[in-house]
Length: 349
Image 1 (spheres, rainbow, N blue to C red):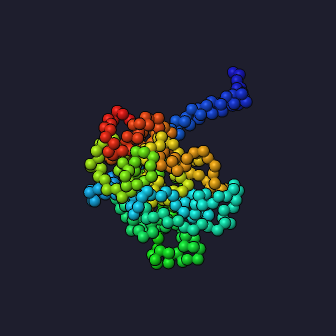
Image 2 (cartoon, rainbow, N blue to C red):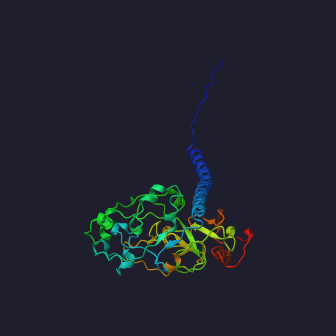
Image 3 (cartoon, helix red, strand yellow):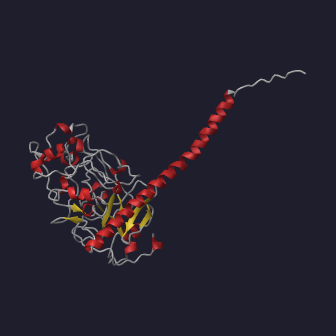
């Protein structure tokens, strides 16, 4: 009987290339689905954050029989911004983009820092609900005499005191809160502003102070505004159709989560989702002022998010709704008012 010898050959180059091509096609088909699944998980976490904020606001309401004031300040309208801008902390904590009329490329770090501007007290609503958010330790460390200095580093506090002043003296001998404190509940995982740097801790969520693009003041028609004392149990236009808190983009002059300006308060007067032309709503002033035809002051007042097609909002009844960025501007503005006299149904948005 004759032994039959079989020759075993490997893949040809053509066959190998076909296998690689098939694998590449499969990866290309699966990658969008994986990315979409990850975004859905991030969106779910964002919704959960808003639900936690809603529970904290309801707890505050139960304890104090009213919502916290959107901003506590002696006078209005509330000025927006801060000399210790988060993006500009590497230049000693000052907003050089607003303080200097410098040409592109000028080294602002070699210039003398401007004098600190008195922006007022401006204690925001987030600081008031920290105990209800489970951040009691952070709440106890807040310097309520100088809330705008709480998150500054020691170097920045020295600069705010004039460059020679002892930071301990500037705080009356008290130690401020560590400036690198982060509160996960106040950060959307999809937000482009969820970066680790910066001297000012910010929030990716803001309360609604008005239905129009107006300064933060005592005559706003939202639920959280200057020296407000509204109740979520008594909303003329209906708690389920009135926005309480929504997502927002970080701006270059964000003053931090303790401050009751546009850092933590926005309105529905701007089109839904309109934000800064820079990434994540942040503007880089490190090379001098940025020339743009966009009204940054007006743009800063609106809600926005990094989600692809929608923005999450906490309504006054505690529910969380994802509103399409393509929704009716008229309906969207009505959702920002507590007492506009327009009764909306759930099918309207």
